[in-house]
Image (cartoon, rainbow, N blue to C red; front, side, top):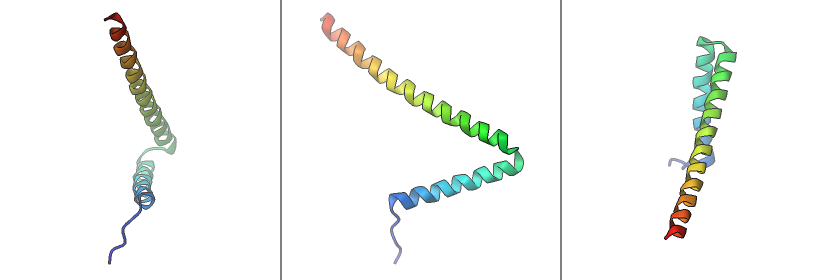
Length: 70
């Protein structure tokens, strides 16, 4: 029988795959470049999430303002 993987085990496998890909990139590009690229990707992702959160908040405020105007 095949053992079902837990979510944590699935996540660990994915992380290992990503690390393997990063290690391959380090063989092609200097480590400092790969680290900076990872940092920029992380910051862009964080900025996107913050922007989406702000959009939701502003849309809610807009709906509230429209409701008050009626």
